[in-house]
Image 1 (cartoon, rainbow, N blue to C red):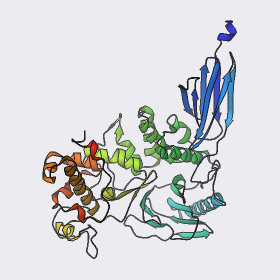
Image 2 (image 1 turned 135 degrees about the horizontal axis):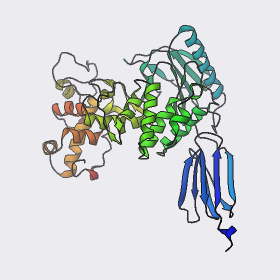
Image 3 (image 1 turned 60 degrees about the vertical axis):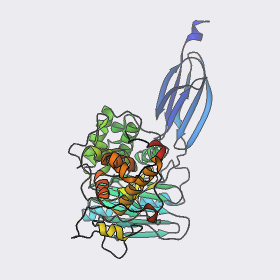
Image 4 (image 1 turned 45 degrees about the vertical axis):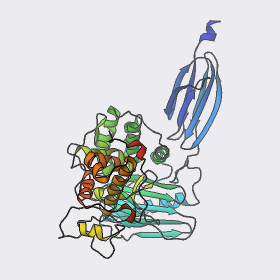
Length: 462
């Protein structure tokens, strides 16, 4: 074999849009390298499989690398399956892009004139007539906004104070939103495709051709599929210049690092930058509860639910097991725990949460839907227990007892409050309140029992 035949080759790949993932495999289909945006790999001469992926869109082929040669791709583009009408979107409905840009620009102009520091734009597309979306404040009161309808498209926009809000969907799922001073939040919803949340500075209208918003869509596509995207160098590339920034990319990138088991220094850098950009945002607070690879909430606490389900389920609820102040007592973040429903990667709940303070009221409602009664029952003694959490805990205990062939009293004696909280994904205080109420017959509950795999719970959850 000549010396030239021994010379290695190169595979160099570069994407023209954010969020394109590359995977290189050898002839035995063993993965040699994986990267986002750019990949530069030295290889032995031979055949290699190259996979290019953007969300669900994938292009794969086989290339031959000659001795001393190189395979170069420097302008890779793939149509992105995005909810928001970013430039790379493969199937944005007609005028979705123009409608979104116009609504955001109008809000920016109004904010400059009125010196308001936060705003919300909701852009929706649906295939036919029906009830639209509603925006509620932190006390679940319906808000008035500027509504513009054009065929299947509709926008809702308003200048608002920073803080927590609710997007109530036509299916009566309440989705958590949080506005931060200096930022405009833009929500996109497409029937059959899902929802996306973007952020842009108040003085910089949302634009479909902004790379940061394409990056957000790419990261969301990965999160929907359980794949981490943008794990590396996000703080420097996407959380820098104010004219090309979407902090949602940072939030999603931090979750990607966490999912990939890479919550190292780069994770801390991203979270620190997010704390500077979005002080008080519950998703950022949730991310900050993970320190050095372990849950350590210390002085951190949330009162409003985060926007991402992963922030709540994987960070805030575990932090509640460590610190009783991780979730503020009686807050919305505590009250929605027993009512969460699946809404893609977003945190949503089924109806307006109302704490139930009286055992008398709990027993008076066979299906725990107290109609015609004051749910808060202020002035009546007893522990504060939300009906949904109460039902979830008691049905869980009944199912464990049935699986083990014992009775509920025996299960309650062996399972700690923390074990039950971990198993049911409820805050410790919600479980404590439920356990103090008298038990009831689960068959009286009107709703379907929660899906619980009891085969994994023959003993306490570790």
